[in-house]
Image (cartoon, rainbow over all chains, first blue to last red; front, side, top):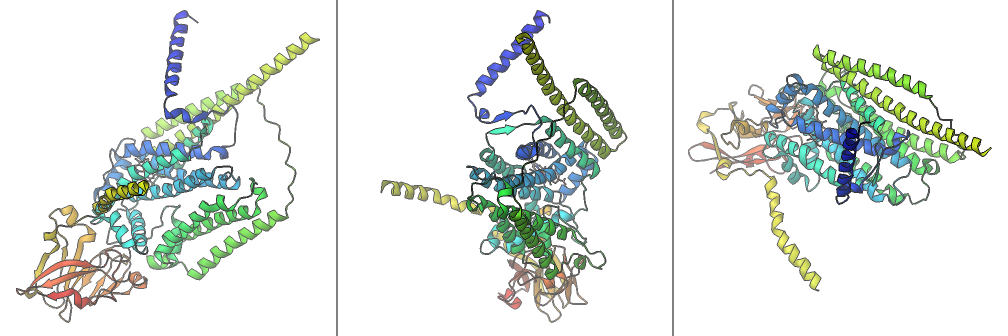
Length: 458
Length: 173
Ligand code: HEM
Ligand code: FES
């Protein structure tokens, strides 16, 4: 290495150290980011992944604001413009849309992992409670977001939301006009303000309390998560729907995270009960868990009652969600197609929930704690294999990126997103192998040194 | 003791801010709230007029579905003003004079001209009070001018039609 290069490097290093030193004075050092040297199960840091997807939403959402118009008549047209005319608008909108789905999904998975592993104990009660509230805000944020498009589906959701707010006891009639204003022309702006500023701000404030101090940044998995956003966007591009039209009735089903509530409404349950009271009860159940489950046991295997409850809640979510999607197309009118027979509905959800609780509870109470299976021997790739694998992956990534450019140039932006997703996914894999080979190298070095030491000892 | 005084002072000094709640409600100006719609001499049983209320002169606001109303002279000569927002899913029902009903184009809810209560379609299956169109409060002066002066019920939601009779919403002044 030439001396000028070395002094250059020293300068950069010094500058880096100088900056890090000054950052000690700020709040940023409160968080300790750990980059794992080895594969660790992503279940443990699903929360960090949720936060990263939130960051992606913040960035893509801010860019969407450049073109989006919060206006009854123009909103739909502006999203259509983003989708069809704005260069890379299709991609920006699809990143935002699919990241939003992924964020809701990751938040739910994160919650259940924490639940089953009993993490809400051991002084984590505040983390748990803020987490549950963050989850609710996430769904509200997604709700306000997809209403911004002002298509038929959005209006259905707005209608249901306003209906249940109006029917809330005592406060309802005075709260609903706060969202509604003087009419839909006010409503769209208010939802916009909530979506792009008020709710994200609340979420950030809560996140500051919710984040534990040690955060795991696992780059291979982060790259794969980005890949998942692009791949799902490529496979299921976000739809525009039909501009809301006050003279046409069509069958619409809301976004998957709201169909559970929709199922209750369609079974004729009173609006406020279906849309607010029951979900609230469900959330409160989760909120109080740490204060009820006082045992010192953490693992789900040692807590059959709470595991049963968790499994039952998953079954309840699953069955109501499926009911929400159910549309009987053999019926003639939209109204009849969407009707859900209440007795059938309540008996299936009641039955499935109870059965899953008892089955889990009894099965687990009977089980003796088995011996843990012996740890499987870790796979060790030789340096040569690693190198050739990485080269192969590089070739595939280059191919996928070439396909990304090509498909975009022939105006197939969804294919383009799919290939880019594949590229990110493979890059995650490449990162993983790179990290693996580093640790193997270290192990080999250590072995060699040991051998050397043994030889000299003899 | 001192702490109590401090707490009381803090509450008193903050209390004016509770008025800020009014910020969140759009206030319609006084002069717009009393709005002339038509003259009674120009109407006959079965005739109707679509209009928006309260009118502002801003087409964006005036075209909002939540501000659309219909003035009807019913077949027995009564004046009625209804919100045009269907309490089912917010489509705009049209008045059909030959039937004496308001019929929604989306899922076929049918409202009576006499009191705006849904008698058929999805809106009719909704529970009280979400099965009736909100009504306009109307005054008719000596010249026969018809003025809309307010709204009874919640637009897009319903009206407590058992408490207030529709004929009580039409006053002669
Ligand atoms: C943090 C800052 C955020 C900003 C500034 C923002 C901004 C926007 C904007 C301008 C739109 C309208 C464009 C469009 O409809 O495509 C939008 C739509 C949307 N947003 Fe956000 N957003 C943010 C976060 C989120 C989060 C956290 C979620 C959900 C977890 C979310 C879910 C949605 C959804 C579902 C849509 C509709 C997407 C579509 O179909 O086009 N957003 N957002
Ligand atoms: S919106 Fe009027 S009947 Fe459904």
